[in-house]
Amino acid sequence: MSCPSCFGQAEGPLVDGARAGIWLLLAVVVALQGGFLAFFLYLRRQAAKAADEALDEEWSQLQRGPAHGEGTTGP
Image (cartoon, rainbow, N blue to C red):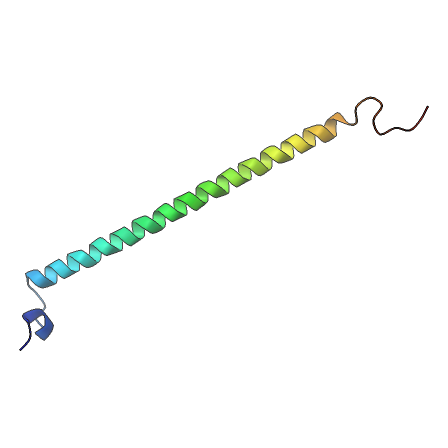
């Protein structure tokens, strides 16, 4: 003898509760994955911003050229 949901009853409060539980767990999984995605996109933007700032700093140093007397061996 088994319960009605195990025996094949397709409707009822037990089945409705199981369906609600599945939807709830699915929503939790999607929310967690969305949080991870948002975090990694944030890290990607921050890394790109830091790389751009480093490149701009290096470029500005190259544009200044050597200071007076540096890099020359002439009289």
